Amino acid sequence: METQPIRFFHRGQVRTVTDAPITRTVLQYLREDAHCTGTKEGCAEGDCGACTVVLGELQEDGSVGLKAVNACIQFLPTLDGKALFTVEDVRGKDGTLHPVQEAMVECHGSQCGFCTPGFVMSLYALYENTGNQAPIPSRQTICDSLTGNLCRCTGYRPIIDAGERMFELPAPTGIDRTQLADTLRKLQRKDTFSYAPIGTENAPRFYAPRTASAFAAIKAAHPNIRILAGSTDVGLWVTKQFRDLGDILYIGQVADLYALEKRDGWIEIGAAVSLEKAYEFLAADYPEVTELWKRFASLPIRNAGTLGGNIANGSPIGDSAPALIAIGTRVVLQRGEARRELPLEDLYLAYQKNAMEEGEFVAGLRIHAREGRDALRFRTYKLSKRFDEDISAVCAALAIELDSQDGETRVRSARIAYGGMAATSKRATETENAIVGQPWNEATVRAAMAAMSRDYTPLTDMRATDNYRRISAANTVYRFWLETRVDAPLAPEQINVRAVELNTLTAA
Image 1: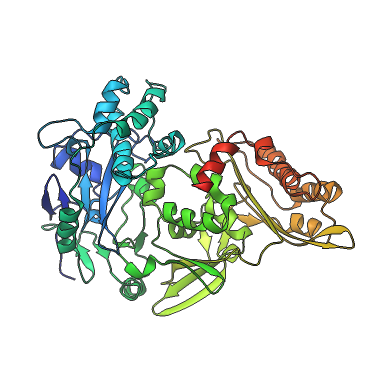
Image 2: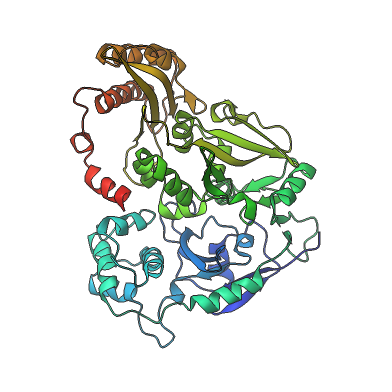
């Protein structure tokens, strides 16, 4: 394919890049090429948020959607057809401060200042996406928008105060969304975007198809090509491991892999749907995943990463797989024009090994809708050292169906899965067998807890010891029973210190 330039909107005009390597990060471009040094590098792995920028993308309805992402792990070619906003773009053309900047000054939200541009951009995205809508975001929503930003100086309180104060200040002129939409519309491509740096022989190439058929054709022709979604994992292969990725096949522009709908008793989520949108849609049917959703990495990571990518990655500590396995999710695989489905738990064969055939890729997920599942009891539990932005030591998901006959409640079916306990996310079949057909009482639960030792032989690593994992995983079964037992089940506020605010998030 003929090489095409990368085109995106930045600093009031369309930028064209022809010579950057395909794995050059947006942060490197900003600091070294565009000389926009307000955006900082702290960790180069999407954790600290000092590099946070805001992307503008054209939506199906013709509007422009804004989202905060980490510039340090986003590759420059993924900007094609999008708008890029940095801290240099926030103030008005006449030099007046944006409300987020004014509020940070008033509330003393900055000390050393290194992390401040990232905080400003996360709050900027929240402000611009909220607009003049009422009510203004709650303090918890402001906190959630800042989960991807770390600060060692302020203690966060004044920054959160600034997040509240900015909505009280006079509104700025803001982004001309109509004009921006017109600009982005002209940058959209009808066919596959193919890029390689000009003047470099045999350089790796970046492909961004527009249809699933075109995506599948490239994958079939190049079975070993590196598939890229949100770059939240692959980006670290470059910034931390300095790996050569070879050619890249980008899923982020494939329109028909953005499916997000409910039909015929199934929830269907395309492989290109972001984690944030996928969890929001799933939580409408399964509100039990709300805490897991809010604790999954950070908002910038969820904005960039995809649920399909998280599943395809197959990490044994990935938080999505256990919950999806527990509610009976099926993964849709595609090769060429052919598609097949298999239960999600059957996708994982061993550590970093899966059941995909050569040329296949994850095209989407199908999840049973909640309607008609009145007997279902479902919970997820994430155990980690920090509440926000941390990787699980143990991630548990338990789902059972109960039957009541002759005054006794028995377990009709059980699907229990754990992450962090084995080389893959794996069902606890011995634990399930100890429950199914038995009365849902403490004796059954104690037997299930004992059976778990036959399901898993966890490892000791930097996150937890094997003994901690073994005991705490078994204890989640007991907690699950306490929450779902027939007589006097424990209410959320009795066992979850954040229950009130999480209930508020679910209701909102």
